[in-house]
Image (cartoon, rainbow, N blue to C red; front, side, top):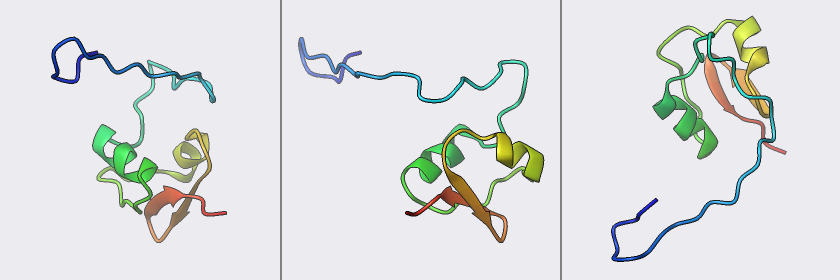
Length: 73
């Protein structure tokens, strides 16, 4: 993946920490909403997230007054 500079590449060392989301199931958050949640913001999703769908989300999240956020330790 190029970052714009000549001959420079960014390498990302990653591993799967949670099981991947099923491809036949719509993810409850939009990519932008998920990005903000992972950056530490509380986000009120555009689509209503049911408690069942919320409990299936990977990671340690919490929901308060309709906002999804990372669980603070």
